[in-house]
Image 1 (tube, one colour):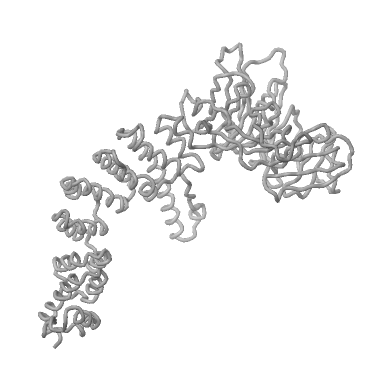
Image 2 (tube, rainbow, N blue to C red):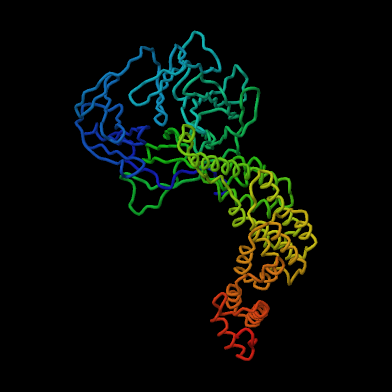
Length: 605
């Protein structure tokens, strides 16, 4: 069942003393700190943050009920609010008024990540005035109006701060408005309306998330996904605003996945009733005591827990059947690589087996992201090589996200295993390999030789030599030195492979010495010798490197053959082994193995 839960609470929550008649709990969204204030602070204030470094404990005089308490960034200044109109700084400091605005405000909301303040204005409260803070400056942004489901008569405050959230999604700032079901408009359910708030320019309504139900909701943003929690059904929905379904100028979105509960979670009981050895008990999910904060925080003050909400990607594989849509979804997630590779493996051997059009779609989506990264890397390198200039300073090194699935990833985790699978038709295996190569070529990504080698090995394994010959003849498999060496090694199985290899090496127009080095490194000593003779370079080549390679094979007859060849060459050229190439040790080895009489007389003259 746990395979179905795509949302979970973090394993290591921040724990604090739960709210009670003597302990008040506050949360600071900027520092992500929980304040547990006992007896107005007289018996202690404990501050806990996302890590141990931000945790601190102290006492302060009880001067009345604490309405709000926060630290400045870095825990340098403490601010305590006890009345509606005053804030006290226990550490005496002088404050300076930098800027003031005269405006009637119903309520405010601050987004610490972007340093943007939203003020609710007008009688109905639906005209929002944003301010942006940067260093010591405050700038007024363009105000905008939230469209209410119905206009009340007479006019009254109709937009609550409970129905507004501010969050960054895909690096853009959005104001999210929870638009409740209106009987008068016959709407099927509530909606979340997203208003895009740029630093400059006007705010526009850009996305509508259809909830298809009514009731109490809460919003989080996790990994660029909008998560909508529904209290009465105790389920959550997720939306990806980049999965578009255009409806005129607006993007209207349905949930990406079916509604599911957050993964069940167990907690340890606290308080006087809890026994030290008591087993953890199930946490009440979607409790009325839960408070939800942006972007991804859920707090249960009654139980003393702060969690970060997390998305689990593995369950989405079975919940989202459309592989193209699934790939679009996964490629935008933070920790997606291994899940994407798992989708590819499942696609080739699971229920979709045999559907090449699905395979092609997935490969193209992967290679598009791969190509974008390669282009960005190339542009960055070119800008750096051109030296410092106004344009090059604007280039940032592209970040390689987990969505970049390169050829080695596909080879290691998907394709090499796939070619070894039992019960899969070899025609389908070859078709898949060629489909991946086609996709790489379509995006003008140079194909790595090991993919071609995988194709050749698969063809040879199934004795499909006619197909191999056609692939090489029509240049479906691109020429490369490693490929030519692989063909040489197939000579005993498929004799024409030798000539195919030589033709490929000649087409490469690579230095003959380099080709020989490659062949020798693969212990293709006879193949190297044949090649060097075919290009007429055998009179000038070093005998030593061939004899070294022959010795390394531990094949005495091969060594004998190579030694004899160079003996005859030297006799023809009237030169000695010892004079060209320093081969004394090989002459000595030859004598030791085959006897001194086996040497040609001219070679020792």
